[in-house]
Image (cartoon, rainbow, N blue to C red; front, side, top):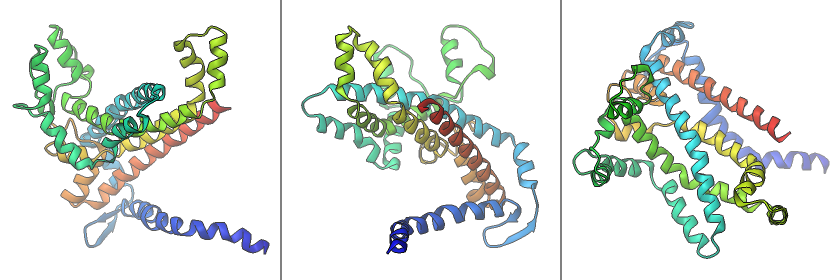
Length: 310
């Protein structure tokens, strides 16, 4: 009887473990093995050792795609934490139609990413897009958006008549446009997660703070932010992973990571090397590097979370 009780939980977990094994762990292991070979589409060539990895570290296109991805993460990450928290705080104050507004916020997340990418590509259209129409309404010059390779900081300072070095230019306007769309797409999901976290905070804390004379802003930073930190770390972790895996937006909204490769992210780079150039071994090596980066950041964030919670 005791043995049955010990085995029974694992039987419930078995289907999920089989799926993870077949579609996660085995492909990762196969990619690692393939990265050491001159691997084609149908056959395995000769063993190359670490040649693909050496070639990667000398590939400027690889480093450009990594830098583009890093820009996306650095901008999307804080925006994907601050904005959802603000919206969740506002939603939490609503007494009527809370379910309706929750649904409205969540709709972009459940909408097909391909459909959303097409709609945003139309919004960024140079001729009749809503983005340029809005700029013209404000009295500003229309922008090239997805076709502009210059950095957003370069464009900003040029509008002020100031020239800055190229390395300070920041992400291209094309990449920044995609970042805006990416943050908007995940806004609803993160908002609902934060809303659930806010509703788990006991009202007794706020009542005690009111008695002590603490204002709303002080309550937010001294009560809400610390007590919602586990939710923040979850959003931080998931947003980091999803940002590094961004692909569909680039494929649908840009011309092969253009202009001038400024929107080519690391996953699109892997796709291009593996399925356009048919260099599976090289693409697998790049995928393993990406796996190591995401794993390292995940472990680092988990370590920071344990220290903060402690």
